[in-house]
Length: 157
Image (tube, rainbow, N blue to C red; front, top):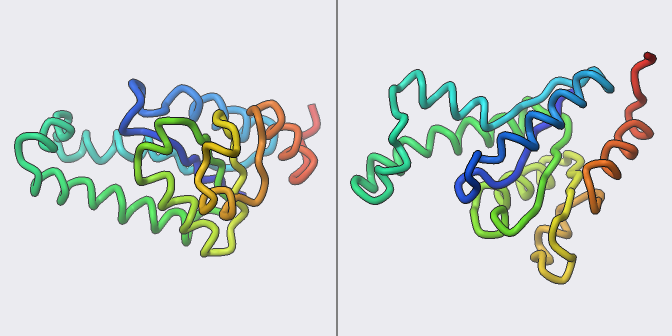
């Protein structure tokens, strides 16, 4: 099994790296699942193309920025549709502000993938579209982990 880790990147200081690292390690250790981590994938692309300052391009060279970011979009959509079995989404104010998370959640739903959403915001503050695309909603990562162990079975210690 392989999980896609969806959530804000653009509007959070660490691009959402901390929660993704934690859940990635847990998924591998406890369930033996593989992970598609868009933060890691972005870091690879940025490094390979020596584009560490690509976010500056949004203000200085919008076409260069759009062309570069399309690589992320294409790569991530392909991963959601073809490489992953389910999607874990961390929904917070930053995810609501961006666009990638909404697209990933919608694409996963449209592709028939399970969408497990950890909600930092109350349901009344989350778009009905997003709520409808989610298979299961959780108030915390601990609740999600309990569910995933029940759903997919944990490894024996």
